Length: 108
Length: 120
Image 1 (cartoon, rainbow over the protein chains, first blue to last red):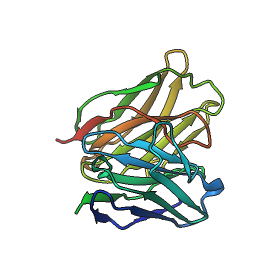
Image 2 (cartoon, helix red, strand yellow):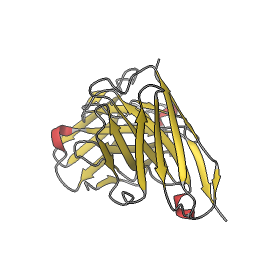
Image 3 (cartoon, chains in turn yellow, green):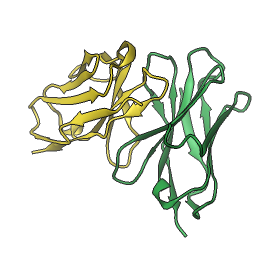
């Protein structure tokens, strides 16, 4: 099983600032098949990024994904109030998928 | 428009078997590249990947739960059924049904989730 480790556990920032969330895999993620999701309280997660860097339909351009191999990042530029939420990474390049433990992005 | 919805019991006793149905519309699970999966999330905790079934019938299970898990699909009725045996209070979670339309895409569609509580 590919273990995904997200850091930091909690990130405290102010609206207008930029956020960088990290996701590290225990082994190389095949074909950069890594996704990022946003989850708000009481809601199902929403897909933001597929294939490490491809925004899903309707996702604002301030969300960007990068990385390959074992190191991936989600960058959110110019944070909006609605961006404060939980974020999870997910690898689907191996036969058995897995999720990271999440990063909470909170308002400072 | 693609929609998914989970249905099943809200409360189970320890040792009972959980059967959840994912009813979906807007796609066919016989279309090449598609898959339907199950994810769960204990209250206040992270997402946990459980199982996946592909358009061609291939199945994948979490190695931690494989001995207790089963997933089947019904293309005619557009349903996927998850079975988890020998339920325990640690299995208390919101269970989500998800869909990916292509092998290279993440889970673009999620059901609203169903909270399943295991308690004596």
